[in-house]
Amino acid sequence: MGKIKQPELTEVQGGQLSKGFHNGVSHCLRMRCRAVPLKAEGLSSAQAGKQTDMSLVSVNARVKRFLPEGITGLQTRPGRGRKPVMNRSDGEAVRAAIERDRQSVSKAGAAWQEVTEKEAGDLTFKRFYQHWRKIQADMETPGGNPLAAAL
Image (cartoon, rainbow, N blue to C red; front, side):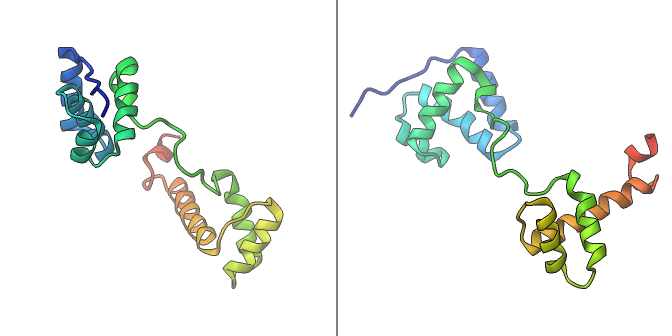
């Protein structure tokens, strides 16, 4: 078994981690803020991971990122996750496809897919249209959307 790497934390860093652990926005951030002090106390990565439900590789990676970047190194970086199939620019094309064939969402979805060369399931297509329609209604009603009233 290798030597346990024990990062030395300053008082400021310890305070930031404690604050992040107690007031963190997400559970992931709170557990990351908990893992670094556990390593600093001398626990192995496996032991710290067991207490925070993280793998020992994740614990080591978070400690490694914390040392140069500080508390911001523990936050989830932007760009993670699956990118959406549809975005706001597709709203008009979806509306047009549904207006052409109101009786069948699957036929309207197939027509939209041919035009845009994107793939989306029937349920995704239907949910996007419902959400887009709700946003459009809020934009048209001055009392429904505070941003629309300001425009």
